[in-house]
Image (cartoon, rainbow, N blue to C red; front, side, top):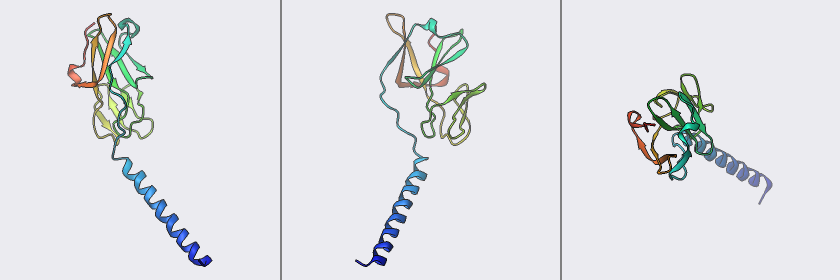
Length: 146
């Protein structure tokens, strides 16, 4: 094979590979990451969660909120590309792509395609809080009364 032919084929192959990678990267933004395992999570004693405060559970990627009415649990995973959200004064924000949610998990702005998921919260026989990420509930039905 002549040198010019080899360089031409190598350049075409490299350009094709680069184009495919760019297309995959672009199209990936339209498909959120799939969540991991959907098992029940025991969070512990309800008293460990301060009243009127969102507590981030790093190992489970969720926020637990306790107020005078009860306990709520919402995912901390952005519905856009699966980034971990941060709590802001007005709700939740995605530090990567700028999606903003209110305190009820509703999308306010950004590329996020849907609202955050609220999980079913229950109390185990030993009194510990249990969150079931496999069972989502409506934003109004998310309370576990304490």
